[in-house]
Length: 464
Image (cartoon, rainbow, N blue to C red):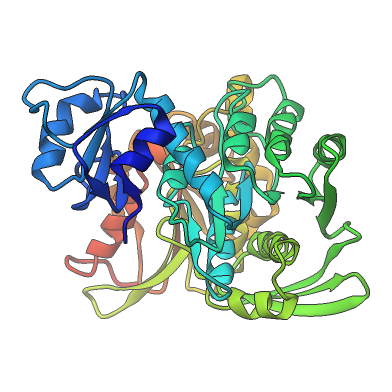
């Protein structure tokens, strides 16, 4: 299926195409590039122009560049523009303009990727659906997602993130969603903001991109819901609220098992039940917001609830698995290793506390970008209710020393500087029948703990 012709891409970007090429995809990474992709030579840690020759050798349909790189023939299939980032954005906006898809934008301090995946799972049952890959939600991820959108798309789910003030509104205006959802607002990226209220204002900026007649989906339970709601109202759009205190989509009850949650909610005057195939009450809340967004996109509520049954968490974001140990026993792994902040860490510890096992063990790493109060925020985890039901907490990283020292002595496990160091001690720290959580900011590489736990089935583990 042709995504872009040379003429279409040149018209979209105002660039110059060499040759009469066609492309069926868009890529920024030669490692994952597929034959027929347009390779976008962005400048990041390395200049993408250095990899154009390699991309063409791997079968790229063309390359989006600002000049002809060394080692590349001038007759090679190229799209030459003044600025590659601007060219990618123009390509994304043209793809959005030519497509009649109903679009939903998702942001939030916690839960945006899981909620995006829920939305995509539901909408796939209703028509051709296009969604952001992984966490492609930044200044290049949003236009890349849009540029990849087939013209036949019926529904699109665009994740929008930020690290600093002023990032969300421009991305939302590129996506031009019909529905925009803010999952929650929490103490994340506080290094760049003076308060959580500032984060709320930035998240609410997603509503700036809504098309006329669009809908804003707001979590009514968050501390700064008023800021988010007022911004939406100021944009002149419909506001739909969800949460335990919301009038539109009210979460009434959540029953949690080891592997799922069953929720009851009220939508207007109607009571509904729905299931989420992952433990954690936070997933039920995210799902309720997703259901509200689907209804605003025109999906029947009962069909949306049925579609939600097929969703399951993705790698590193709450996946549960049983790991067989070499001694014949097993452990249950809660892989939530992709990222962490105080809100998501507390939610993950709640899931661990509710799990059934011989022992409940946590391996948790530093939570980054929390600003001047980061040490206090780490230490404060010792006071959350879930800690009482956790048997041992192993801490990783300099910031987690604050928690290690604050933990009750009977809960205090091992401390290590890095995940690699901690992984060396796993055989002595794990027993048959344990339920084990791994969570931390991405830079803490808790994947070493996850991989180490999986390898215990190939080595040795102590008897319980």
